[in-house]
Image (cartoon, rainbow, N blue to C red; front, side, top):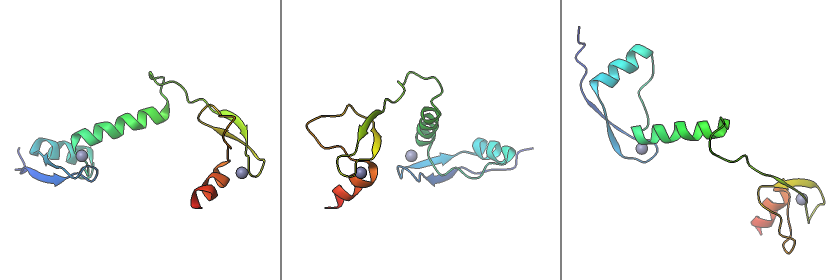
Length: 102
Ligand SMILES: [Zn+2]
Ligand SMILES: [Zn+2]
């Protein structure tokens, strides 16, 4: 019972490369009710990895350390993802953004 799928060439939405959407994959996707993939296999696995990292699923990644600082501009308490350098002013996200706009 082969439903005569044909090999389709798709373009990856991430890296722009062309990749095969093989008849086997099409059948698999149809069975699972998935929609046509938008990314090539390597980008898909990279995305999956990234998602796992976000979930912080006890991987080898160190938990992100945040340092408590006080914003040099408005005095609000905030945290930064790096060790505060006493020589440099530290800004809360709002002030940081307005600094960069100058
Ligand atoms: Zn890709
Ligand atoms: Zn501020």
